[in-house]
Image (cartoon, rainbow, N blue to C red):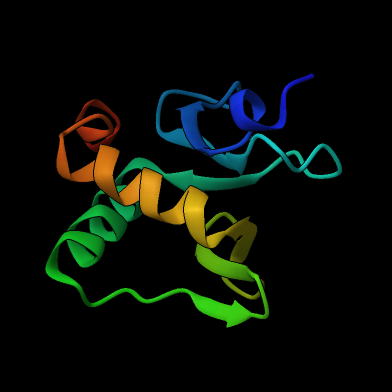
Amino acid sequence: MDGVNCAGLEVEPSGLGGGWLRFWERADTTSSGVLVSRPAFAEFVREVRAGHLVPVAHGRLIVVTVGDADPERPGRVVTTVDSWRAFVTRLYAGAFDRFCRM
C-alpha cells in the first residue's frame, strides 16, 4: 500500500441513512471515522471556507472535530497537516458540496 495514495480526509454517505455521512482519514486504519449529519457537515464546510475552523495541532498531527452523532462526545478525526491542506484545497474547489445537500 502506497502511503501517498492511501492518505487523505474523505467523506462518503453512511450506511445509517441518507442524512448521515462518514468522515475519516484513509491512512488511519485503526479508525472507522466519525458520523456527521449533512446539516452539521454543511456548517463545517462553511466554517472552514470562512477560515473560522482551525484544527488542533498535536506535534505533526492535527485533530479535526466534526461529528455530531453523539452530542456529548463530538467526533474527532486525527490527520496530518498535509492531509488537512489537501482536504481544504478540495473543499474550496467544491469537491464536497454534494454532501452538504439532503
